[in-house]
Length: 435
Image 1 (cartoon, rainbow, N blue to C red):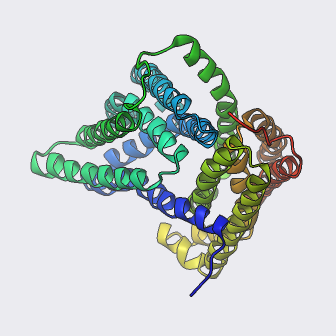
Image 2: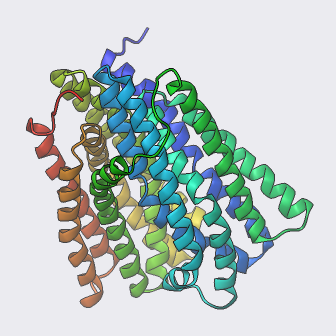
Image 3: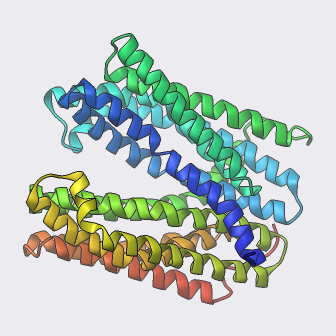
C-alpha cells in the first residue's frame, strides 16, 4: 500500500476535484462550439469573437473567487466562522453589483468591443447577438465565482465540481432542444448558457445560506465593506490584467506576422492553457490550505505545504510536458491540415512542453501567495514581469524577428514571474498570521 504524506493527502484531496471542475468549465464553450458549428461558418465565427470578449471580461473577474477563497480560509483557520460568513455575504453582493455593471456596459458597448476584436458585417451581427444575450448571465457568472471561492475557502472542492458538470450538461441539453428542436439560432446557444449560469448561481446561494444561516448576521450589503473589498480586490485585478494583457499582445503581434504565424500561435497557446488548468488545481488547493494554516498561526506548516505544492506542480509540468513533447506533431495536426501551420505549431508546442515545469513553479507560487493574502506583491510582481516581456514582444514586429522571438518573450515572462514569486516565498514577509 502506498504511504502518502499528510500534506500531500491534503493537497490532492482538494486538487483532484478542483481539476475536475476546471476541466468541466470549458465544456460550456465546447458545447456551444459543437452545436453552433452546425449552423454555419458565420455563426461559428460570431461565437468565436463573442467568446473571446467574454473570456476577457470574465477572466479579469477571477479575483472574486481567489480573494474570497483566501479570506474565508484565513478566517476559518483562525476559528472565526462568523467573519467568514460575513465575507461570503459581502462577496456575493459585490459579485451581484459588478455583474449588473458588466451586463449594462457589455450590452451597450458590444459593437465597439467586438469591432476591436476584428468583427464586421454579418460576423459582427452574429457576435453581437451572442454577446448581448450572454450579458444577462453576467451577475450569475460572478455570483458563481464568489460562491466557488467561499466553498474552496472552507476546503470544499467537491460541490463546485458537481455544479460545473451539472450546468455544463444542462447547457448542452438546452442547446440541443432549442436549436434542433425549435430551429433557433445562435441566440438560443447564448440563452442556454445564461439559464445554466443562473441555475448554478442559485445552487451556490442555497448552499451558502445553509452554511451561514446558523449565525445571526445581516444579509444586507454594507457599502463601506464593499468599497474595502473592491479596493483589496483591485490588486488581484491588476495581477490578472497584467497577465491577460501580455497574452493579448503576444497574439496581436503574432497576427501581424501573418496568418500562418497567428494560427500556429493559437495552437501553442491553447496547449499552454490546457496544461495550465492541470497545474492550477494544485494552486487552488494551496490557496485554501495556506490561508487556513496562516489563519491558525501555523507558519512552519504553511511553508511545508507550500514546498509540497511547488513540487507537485513541477511534477505535473514534467509529466504533461513530456507527453506533449512526444506527441507534439499529432497534437498540432488535430487543429490544422495546413502543412505550414502544423510545422510551425509543432515547433511552438516544443516551447510549451519545455516551459511546463517552469510554469508549474509560477502557478503554485501564485496559489500560495494568494492564499496568504499577499495580493499587493503579486500585483507588483506580475506588472514587473509584463513590463519586461511586452516590449520584447513588440520588437518581434518592429524588427521582423519572427514567432520564436514572441515565445522567447513568453519564456521571459514566466521566468521573471517565477523568480520574483520564489524570492518572496523564500522570505517571511508573506506569512502574516491570524485573521
